[in-house]
Length: 193
Image (spheres, rainbow, N blue to C red):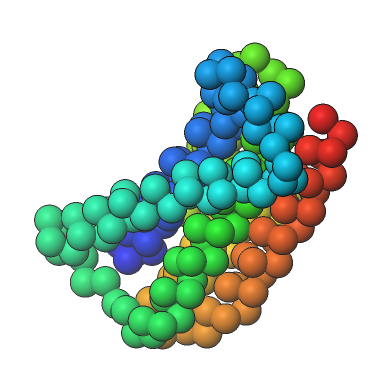
């Protein structure tokens, strides 16, 4: 259970650095007076905003590394890393898919003045529903189908499977597939907004 919680807490850092920040990404551009310039740039606005949200996700790698180091050296949790290549791909798929989810949040929340609060509001429920700290089997049955629609669920499962020696490739594929779906929906919402 400590290994389960350690990897879940590590991915929480990626999600936490994305949810609130991505929710207010376009608001910040509006406050700085650069949103109009970015929208009128000769490239599609999605190619400007998506790297911003993926970078926010990548910033969560700092907290992931810190969490895993603290788990190992301060709390003495013996963390397995059975498949390091799959583990690396799992981490990348988690970062990219969570960044794509952040992109969807950014374009969906742009019309709200307190977009950061909406992003912050989603932080804890996703922690719970994605199974970061609590196994999904302990949650009510109706929660599981919701968790299947969240890329962080598949990202954390891929990381845990790769670390413990399981087959992480299906979860890696599902995380990336959901990230692609988020990207498609985000581009459609961006065109509408």
